[in-house]
Image 1: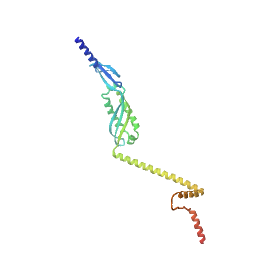
Image 2: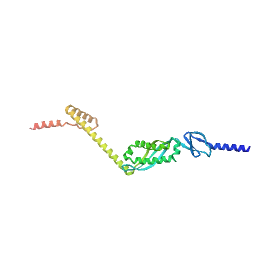
Image 3: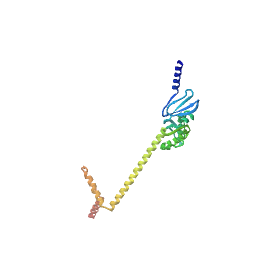
Image 4: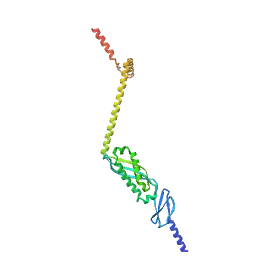
Length: 251
């Protein structure tokens, strides 16, 4: 009876040590005597203790923060660039059998690829075409990690740090560009105003009555102000006629 109870307890211990629970977002890569046996999906699984071992692999999307890399661009500008890589394991067997630590290796690969690709572009391209660089980085990383059973879903350059001297030079350049645009806008305004004045002068020359109407409008505007002194503009032609009559009377 004692032997039966001991055997039963031993059986319970063996069964309990053989039970493995795999979460739905995981895959279990199972080895039998050290050799690949199968890949288990989520659920309750039984493993023979001492004979079968299992490595759990997370199949969810993982965010990888690429540390800032000191890079020299093609036009010899030094900058520090960091990025974020989003990837996930699509083949658990390859991720375990092909590479030692897929997360660490993906991080190193992202760092070297980032340095190599940014170094092939000029500073202005890096600052202005980040979307294109992100797509190119994703393609390069995806091609290199595909044999590992890893799919790179997206890459985004997070921050670009430039030297203080370059920041000051860019600020001066931006200020000069704004001044140039302001001068161009001012010159265009002067040109348009001159064109309108010329058109108004030509119209008044063809229709002298418009000058009289403008004169009356000016008097109306002056009268609306609360001024103690009212100045009446007198046309030069009127004064010249009076001068001619006065000279004629003296002669």
